[in-house]
Image (cartoon, helix red, strand yellow):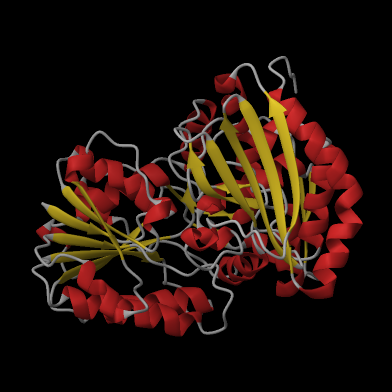
Length: 477
């Protein structure tokens, strides 16, 4: 079968792709930026990648027409613009109109549960997208999920931040809202078993685990799995705005995502029935089992995808290739060169930078900078990194974005997603047994120049020591 996979660089898409390939399908992956998509798979011959902007109908011509099935996995949960509903509607319209001109027999859409009488803006938008997609001249199925629990999922990471960092939580009253969480493994199973299954054609299904829990109960269950004693006090005085700030400062989510999450968490997301479980012979994991499974994946360093690596977690709104040429004119630079004796060991240290591994010099200053960035509306350091020793182009790395990660060229290029009066790059490369470390800052006006001179004393200390520590084969954290 020839399957179209939209959202191939997203959290769900990255999990679904290997399942499709392992089952022998030819998969056409739609991506907005090919430079971010480098799947490590033994099934490369079954894979085709096309670059598409679904807001621009003309770009959809890159999609082949001899399709059997298609997945629609496009959402805008972290959209910062006020007209995200219009963007989602236009994206769905362009997709539906183009699919209606292809040979596709079946389209599957992953949406949110919309059974409550009052819906948040995002849930209402997803229902509108469902209506647009259902109007196409193909068989159509909607799978509606609530909270998705898995290693790297936004919901899982938020709960993890709250439970592991706060022994006592003073929380808003929406923590008493009920929902029906589902494990990521079961979501992928439902998606895979639904496509081209005639029993599911032209219907919508709610998918969820066996447990109906309040967010408060989920947090306390999460704490029990982690063997932590936690206390939650709910108060009625936290407005949606204050609740959004609470999530933003305590967890790794951006403020726009926090706002949308809070609005959605005030709505009950409970399945009407579980008939699809019997139809597809799926027995979903309990919430407790889903949490335990997620931590086993983390302990084994087997996180396939993380919401933090999606562009919506940061401040880049265009292709990564736009940042790969580091400017030379009108910039301030800090250049360090250190002779090295073991390039492979140095490469391993470069590839392990950030996250829990730290930055090899004055980590407390990096943490302070992350806190300041969070206070002014930036990403801060809480995103960390998905893997302790693997880096791919497009990954989030604390308050940086990986623009290029090329082990063959021995080069790592990072672009700053922190709030700055300008733009910043940090590059590491090894040539002829010399480590080159170069920080570049392109200021924006007078504020940018004042900022550079203000932090220059810290840069002199941090960057020199960082390069020397990375180059030191005997360095210990």
